[in-house]
Length: 607
Image (cartoon, rainbow, N blue to C red; front, side, top):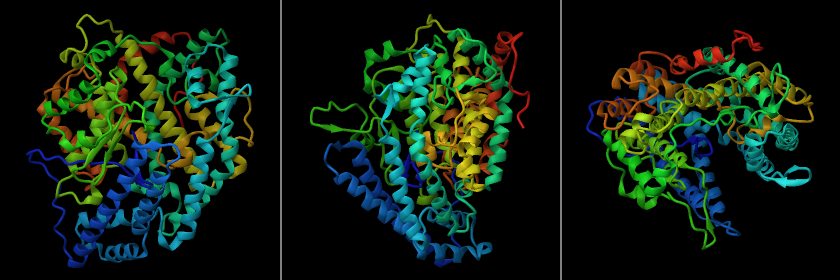
């Protein structure tokens, strides 16, 4: 899960020390006593305030009591203190002053000082009135979004109910009503999106950023247009396969609904409100281990997840992980509830690591536990003295999700499951359908995330997209990148982009997900082909110390070096979706057979 620990800082990190040789460049070789003193003080106060904020957030998420607002008040107070420190004029002026002499600074000093300025960009003291208006507007927008009363035929429905209809209902009229109901919230959000765009842009301009999109992208050491170019290149990489999936989906769904094959996919025909995930289009027989896990129990899943990492050479989790985490569902008898969405927490950017989950003994939670433990072991690996507190994070924002998803994928492959006795050797699996299902997730997501979302937010923030063209631009991009069209014309009364929560409360960084998916396959193919010498579709990482050493080499440097240098050093290549395309190459042959004689409506190349 992508989790923001404090407003603008992505969660990541743990304490972990294995006696491998590779460590980051020493962090404490400062060239100037003043810089040393400033950075040491900043890191110390940052950590102190971070702990207070995270402890407050943890209580808010793990002990929800109706009518008790004390946890919310504690979060507001802790986060306000954190924001005041990171955005203070004193810290901004000091960092800027030291960076004027960057030729006399070490690389790790420069990275810390630049990160201090980046962090300040979200809430600079010099723009405190604008920052407060932004915070208030963000709270208002979040309330409008999550408090909206969705209705179908005048009856209130939840988003889960809408999603259920889109995933399983074959009546196109009912699907249309559900899809249209899901978009009504955008009407109430449009004005706020424009106001927030202006406030976010104004806030970061105080630190010299041209706009909020450029600000968020700068965390990658890139300019806004460079990120757009990178994302478009990822779409181009997967486009031939996506084009085949699009054609397959048009004909498959037309047959399912007894309708004429459409030129483009009607949005309400797809099993997801935004067309970002098509996995519900098929029921693939595959790696379902529900029966086995039910017999073992929920605690088995967590313990086996830990043993998986230990088998690769990682240390056992600290006792405090089990003492302080909230791993299993609450019974609710005492009126206490908790957030049931799985997440990993690095409370102090040192030894205190926790996970918030509601583990149940089934296949879905098996993959989720391995994913969250991937974050946890990433935390522990870079939490060492050579990595300063504020650089204890992923090499870029996409790395953490990639690491978690990588282990989640590996733990659901057939050889692995058979090796652990979780799946019988005679289990029926349709490997082609399993690969198709994975493609309907990972491949379909790239034109959506790297294409639609990235280009739209670039238009919104960098190009000040007029409010009179917001919905028009949205559907232009959806048609171009996804080959999806609305069931009927959608005028500027609507703001269909704003129905996606990230536009409202996690803005201008959706490309993180596309990057993480691409990294996942780059890492997995390297491990399967260069280390394990196994079929990437059927690997078994268990017990491979060499795999563990490779993973640790990716993790241990934290954010102490440029992610592009890091990737070149460890994989010998720069980022591209080639590994993803190679992984799905067997599926391309199958889809071309399925699509023989069918009309492809997407262009062979996307401009």
